[in-house]
Length: 394
Image (cartoon, one colour):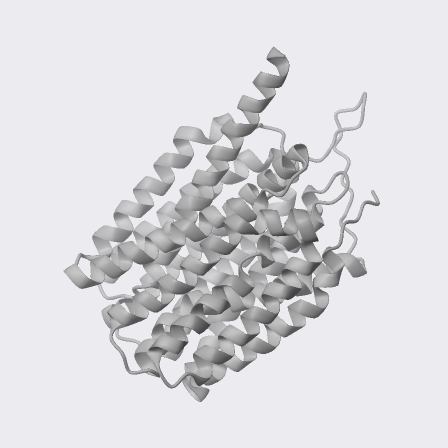
């Protein structure tokens, strides 16, 4: 009985720590993104040039994503967490200081450093969450990603209030960078040191390095997560700006729109576990994906901001379970850390690299017209969702 109680306390402790990590990731990102119109004004660039500035962060993230699988296989997910969070905080500090001097290149360089930290840190917490979910035997990643969305909602609120009261964006960024890094250093040792490490052969110190095979299922999972992640990342980067540029409304209204979408994601992720456990991953992904397509079209075509708010809510709900459920599917079977890292990398190609590139299309077509492309990718994800059915073949 005492052993069971100890295991239960250990599970709860790890789950709480991971919840906090996802939460602070969401706060940091959203509190910055909701104030992108101000960032653009600080460094005096167009929407297209802002896309290049954001692209530097994507380059950093993709670089670390390429290396994260090997890093975690050797050092474990816990090490990825502390390295990632610390590097992320450093990059945010560089970005904040660069805003003071109105240096676009400095903001881009800080984004590059922050992206390096974000990529490896996020893969670390996703690998940890996937392993904990398997130990539990029930859906957990939707709730953990719900913590990310809850943090994003809080971050959007913080950013919107800061806009209203004219609180310094620079001070906000420095404070969040410090809090994020401090939390990681205070708690990371409570995670298992060997999570994500490649298994070691009995009687030998040599690590077994088995490459991940990009079979049909992994590719389909990757394409599915790419479609929904592109729509999620596109909303994070460009939804608020579309309200300012295309709807011709103020930054406060833009912040409210972003918050509505994020709140819908929070509700869907925290309640989605029951939907998945009852009807399965495929049903959940396809049903919500259709809702997401409808929501994006409402944002594009709405004659009023109030109907667009409904569309933003459906958009948020439609993409909410994409990342956690495709990652959960990749974790099916034994020795799954490398598969999880691979599918996560697919997702972040879209989530981090896609939205900055969409900025160029937004500059040429208008942001609302660019959103048609996002609706198409969500529809593609609905098709590829069939690969997320339970599977075990290791």
